[in-house]
Amino acid sequence: MSGTDPRAKLEATLRALQAARAAAEQAERAGRAQRAAADAAAIAAKHEMLADRGPSARDRHEHMATLHRRNEACQRAAARMLSTFSQSLQRWATRPDTDGSLRPVLMGAVAATVGWEGAVLTLSGLSGTETLVAASDSTTRRAHELEMTLAEGPMWEAMHGHTTTAHDGGLDTQWPRFGPAVRGLGVQALAAVPLRLGTDEPSGCLTVMGHRQPRSTRDQWSLRDVAEALSLTVLGDRAAGKPRSMTSAVLPSFEAEDLQPTLHQAAGALTERCGWDVNDAIALIRAQAYAEDRSVSDVAEDVLNGSLLP
Image (cartoon, rainbow, N blue to C red; front, top):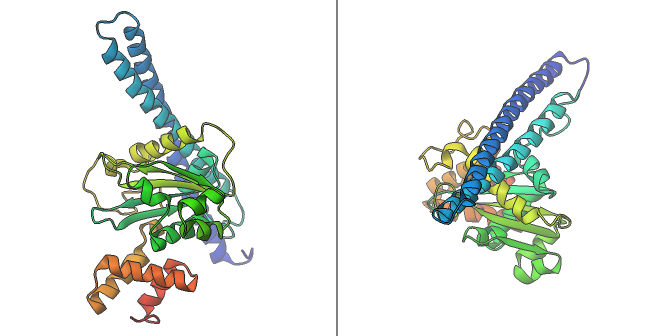
């Protein structure tokens, strides 16, 4: 950034102020989650004490204690995740070149919380079309695009309720097309868990990936805790099953591009031009991106500006 350009300096200052405000909001949310965890721990301890007093209501108290301990773990995971996000935003806001590095995103904090290099969150609507794709970086976003184009990978299994892990050659064995393709991106290990938003059926997926598996033996539990934290404390009204539209105002922790406006606009344009089904139009855009080794957003831009015509 040029130090003599007043407009550039003003824009950098505005970005820094916005990041600092976002950092404060995330820190406040982390504090609320920490307090909620403490409350859940106290209630769980009370039920555990009552369960030890006699057999008459032991099952009920043990059940309630288990529920509150799960809530405690979820809230503590949310506190760690949101605190990490807040700290990364604070560091970014104090950089003198805030236009020279990408603004931190929530999924980067998610990945750091569970000890993986990258993370991607996907949510699907009733028709199965993606309504949100939030990735920590370009590699994880590209890996997700490969999953959608090749129609195989951990997300597909998680959307059927299965937790999945694979690494090294096991990627190729489990997914003959996706495995070699994602390893071509440098990904050698991944894990995925289903996300349930107020229903028994999975309506989303959290996938983490990297060059290797983290060494900690707690990673599977941590991943489950963070997935629940995303469902209950970050996605807000969506997790409560309320019928609200997917907008950046409803999901303030995510970026506008996570809602994939370009892809859906391009699919709408193809539907209007050719009378195709929206899902077929999206599939065509993904296939074109895969064939040309380009990003889906780039191909969608070509559709919108008319340089790629059906």
